[in-house]
Image (cartoon, rainbow, N blue to C red; front, side, top):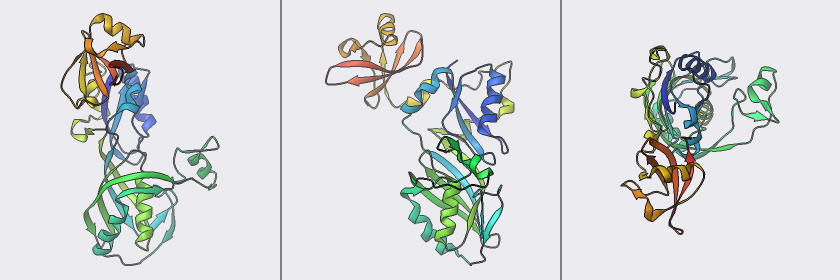
Length: 294
């Protein structure tokens, strides 16, 4: 079975827990995903079933959207509410200060991965080092914040609710900590929900308990859904076999339908979606880019 399954991850579950549970219910060994969520976080996890995982690097949209609750006044060792407070401040911050600071994070920024993360240093996960009480140097990484909007600010609770759209790989915990630093105080992530990922919104997500072993594939979304804006190429059975075996096709012998006319196209044969192909305009050929059906 190939396709996407959009899970609404419950709080307290690791991303591995989600994949393991779905694997057991659906009886599918090969399941990937487009990005982890911290255990405390809820919201969208995009699971890729079977050979759909091969399409990950071809996704046209890998941005994520979050609703984040940021608590001012305290820094924790994990940068979120699950950690221990390591510094505190009673500095007053008003809504004007917050709005001015948030604009500084829009665009391409650099982040230092938190110690409590799955990033590896010399082959060891940072969170394993952190649990040993060790802190090591981490290289900064470039990420992109497309937008960051203040939804509300509870002055008494010193809590901001933010709507954030960002590139894959962005650490919202680190963003919360950095916001606190620029405000001249401290901050940590109090709650987090991913509301959109890789072009899929939370309104089509399903809870794990809604996946029934008697109808395990009921909520699976077709693998070509993420590429709906690409042009479509329709090939014959013989051409399909050629592409599966890594061969090229003459563009003059391929039926191309409307779409964005990007270099990548969806390929279909009589049995449905075959995978993605790459149009070589110079040579007038269609090459297989990622074939998910064999």
